[in-house]
Length: 599
Image (cartoon, rainbow, N blue to C red; front, side, top):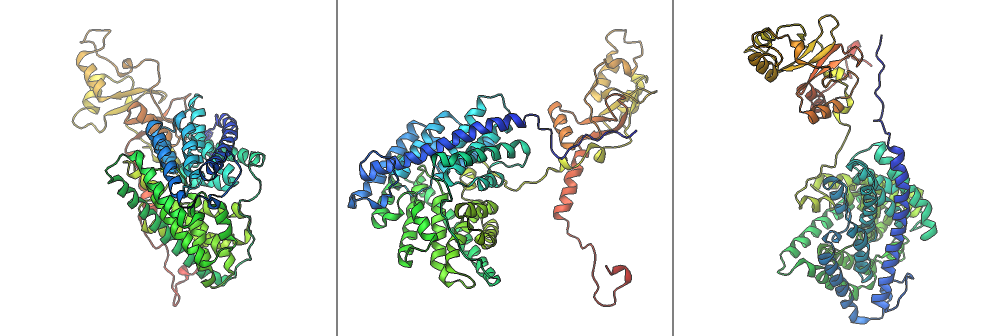
């Protein structure tokens, strides 16, 4: 009778409902946290630039401080440095690399200090004029919320990772109103897997944040826009845009880490670096006030072509310089908003000269392509651009340009702006992932079907001579009942040799010992034909087993094969052939073709 195949498309997800339920709480708390961060930024902006206690939105560019504005970012940087030194050094940086590092190398654990001090430090840094976005800090803060909840529930590290990423992406959803892009950010950048146990909690948390956002933060797209559909002739311009944005991503990423290297050479403690970076921000803000702060209003003006070319060029130059110097100093702030501004500005400058379409679409195309190339997340960038603007006509050109920018940076950069920081801490991250070849194959596909076995009633001295002597092929063999073929146990070289020398413990050494007498009633570790190689490989690793008997089922225990470490290499060999072995399957003859060659 044919055995029932128990394999499924997905692993058993018995705890999926538990994780999804917790994700509802994580999504709600991350939304509230995001709202608090935005209010903190507005509060400190009014405090630093207008000396008022208010959380109303006011652009720092409208200040009346004159040259005294240079001092404001310095004060903010000094406070951030003190918080980092005497609070938690983990608040330094733009957030996403720190979240990735916690996921991959710290079992998805974050401290309560990060959940409190990160938004505080970011609010001060951005509120005092820092040219950053709020998304990086809220990704780390939301991640800390998810991690802390996960640490108070009996979860595995993998399950805790799902909650950390759920909190991070829910925070991003709350800030930008982009739930689908946030889920894609998780898939392309944070999860390092695609499983129901991780995807479902992330999607639930983002959905919750999306529904709650209008209750706390203004509803609707952040940058509403409507452009005209582009003709086919615009494809060349999209390709040019992608290459230019890839070059911009390469330039910014390399420049940032050169600046960071420069700060490491300074003969002062790193606590003072944010204040030094703040001095550069202050000077840049004095020359170009609209370069200060998050700059969402500036991004909106760029997307709608409300700025003159000379003003755009000056703004982009100052914004790029102060952003690189401030972020390289190790202060607290995000990268998305500056990238959006720089990309949109480049598109606004070059749009009138690109053939094949209206100039209005190019700031959005360049903005998304810069983001896709810099973050190495092109699909997220495309959907992000759509959710920010609700401009469906721009989807196709954005897809083309973002893909080209992504390809450009993959070919020219070993690491992205996010992973380079982690690599400098001694951790390499490989961002390509696919289905584990051990998951794709069952035990029955790779096992040896005709294993050498030992009869249970055989004399141990005979077995030692025939199976564990100089001509022995293996170090362990399945022992089977001669009548039924049922597994009795596994006899290894060490046990057989030692027992043959000393005899059985319950009788004199002169009395012959049969193999069956070495085993009790407990069944040894086994594998089933329908199990995945990955499941059995994990079992072998946990118990230090080099070989496992394969039984038809747990009732009959009939041995049908043997699985060894060498058998588990076979799926990897198959994957190697798929990836690296090039071959021509069929040659096409255009003239004088034989009938067999004609399709």
